[in-house]
Length: 308
Image 1 (spheres, rainbow, N blue to C red):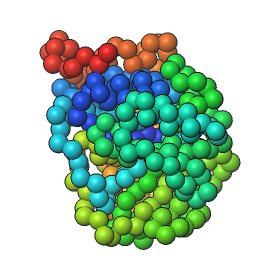
Image 2: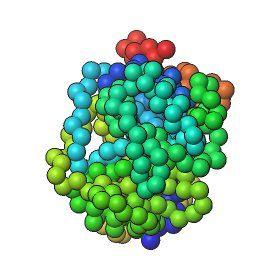
Image 3: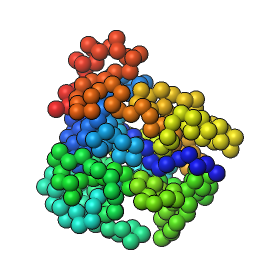
Image 4: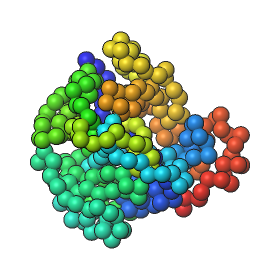
C-alpha cells in the first residue's frame, strides 16, 4: 500500500469559451487565476489554472478551453462532480451569489451528513460547495473571507463497477469510510481531511461518458516531490498499471495512468509551484509559454482570445 499520496492535487477539465470560463471561476466563484499558459500538446489552446493565492496543491481547478467545443455527455468512467470546501453558514450567501449570476441547476442536498449546494458551470460541469471545517486560507479579492472557497473537498467518480476502483484507492492509501445507496466514500487517514476524500458513485444504468466541454479530463493526486513520485510510479508499475514516465509540466512533474474504471489519474509533485516564473503578486497575469512553444509567442498572442 502506498503512503506517499497526500490527496487531490488538481482537477483538469475541458471548456468551450476561455473568456466565459475565466469569468465564472474568477468572478462568480472568486478563485484566483494563478496561471495563464497553454496546452503542451495544442499550444493554440489555453491552459488556465484557478485556486488560492498560490494555486496550492489541493486548490487548483484547471481548464483546457477549446473554443466552440461540443459539450460532453455525462456518464460512467469519469469524474462526475468536483466539490469545493466552504465555511459553515455560508451556503445561503453562496446561493444568493450564484443565483444573481444566473448559475444553473442550483439545489441543496446533504451527503454523509454534510450540507451541500450543487450547480453546474458554464459548460454543464457538475460542481458543488460543501460546508466543511477547513482552516486553509482562501483568496478573498471578490468573496468575503467568511464565505470564500478554501479548496477542494472531494471529487465523485461515476463508475459502472466500483470494485476495481475501490481496490486501487485502497492501494493508494485510501480507507473506505462510508456508504449510502450508490455512493461509496473513501478518504485518506489524517486530521482535517482537506482535499483527501473521493466518492465513488455506482451507476451501471448510465452510458459511457463521452468527453467534451464540461468533462473532467483527469484528476491529479499530490506527492511531495520527485523522489516520492518515482516511488509511486514503481509501485503502480509493479501492480500492473501502465504508467507514463515523468513529464515536466513546468509547475509540477506529472505521471499518468488509466484506471480500471476508465478515469485518467495523474500523480503530480508539489514542487516547484506556480511562482517559479512569476512574482507572487502578479500570478496569472502574463501569458507564460512552455519553452518549446516560446517561438510561437507572437502568433499565439494574436490567436488566443483575450480573457479580461
